[in-house]
Length: 114
Image (cartoon, rainbow, N blue to C red; front, side, top):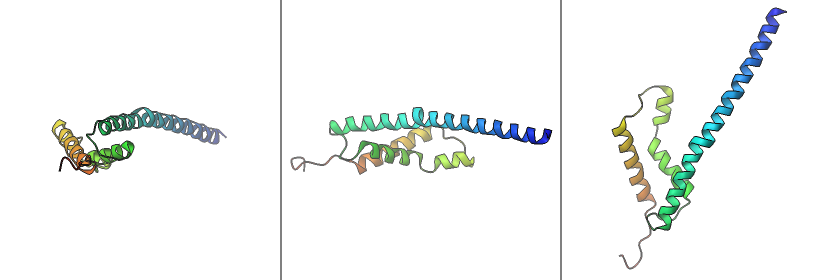
């Protein structure tokens, strides 16, 4: 009897821990990743309005930028097969991702500028 009560209690504790972990993950997603993605999309929409970026859904452009920025880094970090990048690598990744996005979504040239 004591063993089954112990197992039942362990199962309840495990469920509670899992629920908290899920709430924590959802909070990180909403207030971290989603918020940053929305802020980047807003910035890109402003760049489009000023003629610095070409046509395209700013949210999609933001997703492309973030995919280029991260590459396979997140998986490597999660697998612990490499160390976190230093400041120089972070800056180089950001510049490379931005160059690619600016190239992919360059503003259309008008006939006057050709």
